[in-house]
Length: 402
Image (cartoon, rainbow, N blue to C red; front, top):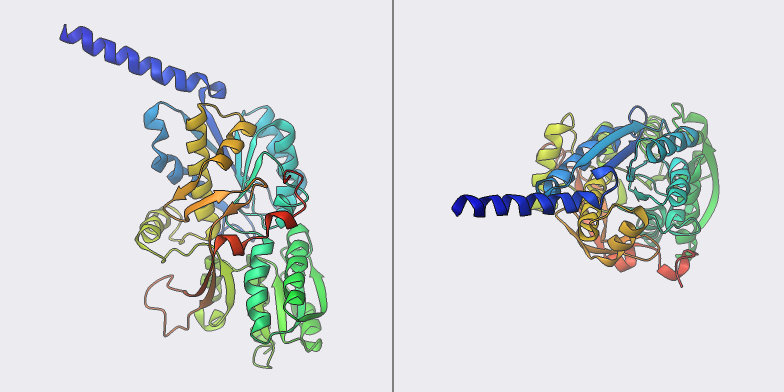
């Protein structure tokens, strides 16, 4: 009798697992991490984004409940055509269900449209352009971590209010740089400042000297760096060599990551003020994650992109399990219905336009004397509540907003 009852339990469990798998296409939830694996964004995203996705799958416990999850990755090389071809190959041939990360707005906007056309899901974490929840919004895309409106609202507003009321922009010459300059200009003007000039700079530029000389000659109080990754660190290092800050002008890093500060070193980066949505040293949970993460990513501590990949994949898997389906459009709808809650961003929500809502932080880089241990780089100056950190829903021009 006892053996029969054990057999019954085993059969019931097998049937339950089979039912879970049957609702998932090909019996596998396939996650594609599309990132910059070899160029200027590789440390802030790259292989670390794959690590973050794997940790999310592990922490979700979904595989213990009968689901199979597979993670694939590729390098988009910061080229929209390369990223588009990978996305199509993944969706059409490799049966990838969701693409995550994509730290390049030009590539992300292309993947956004392909994902919509294919009825899949896109967790945009690395790209900044606020157009992803504005004129290019999609029912298949969720924009996690940060965007250009948030960066502009946080950093641009704070610096202008502190007296930095004339700006010159050095902007990356692609979708992200254009969106960040546009959104920061709006914030500066809203707060009584003015923009006196700007220059567009090709992606992955090594020599910023001519652009910095233009900024210096503009006499603007603030030189706004609408770039990211290696472009940001190169422009800050070379600005120091030109004595721009010593000459009385200030740099505004409009998108700065923890890995940028690490590359620059505190003697060069100290005093920089910018906006983030995650810092590894916030609390016990973020510190525990950072310890696990760094052990798997060459000792690098997690950026807000890495945190966003972890958080978004965790929530995606919760939605798949709740639906018992990996249908992209339905899963994204379910993600919006469910409140978000994870160890790194805490409680939050996803709006109808796809914007993930959580607090943002105005941070300042510590001096070398203030830093007490490795990667101890930030002071949190102010917390911006989620409902203030991101663009008001009605202002984005998203067609999903009724």
